Length: 162
Image (cartoon, rainbow, N blue to C red; front, side, top):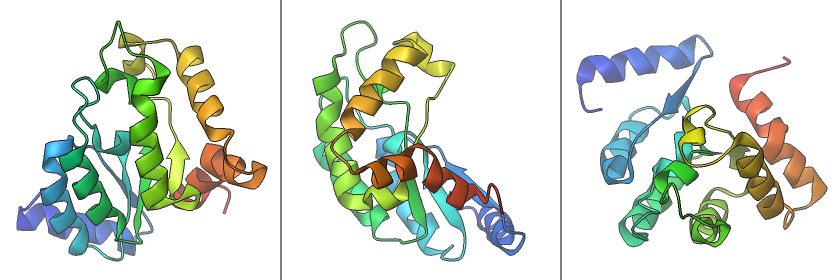
């Protein structure tokens, strides 16, 4: 992520109206923060909320990095891929809640978007189970916010329907 040619290439995307999906693991958040700071005009979405180590319950370092990344207004966060970061056979919805809570606290419902991570997520669950879990979690938000999370923010971010 620190390669000048890579950064130059990403910088060109904004001029063409393109976006960038940032797929990293939690331990790469510091490098991602430096990358994002160099690309303030590029709309970037952090995939899978930065792939935190849900399986081992590690949250502190991820949460600090996520908070710093969320300071950049051009960064959105995709609510996807969480179950594959948990224990595939033994995860339960409560395992995901602290990570979801912090993500929404930092990005707000206006910069979060639902994603399925299908078919990769089928390593740990079915599409239907993940969707049900996400919808249940989103019930705490207003209907307007739920619509934004489930479709509106994605349309706005990716420029769909312009």
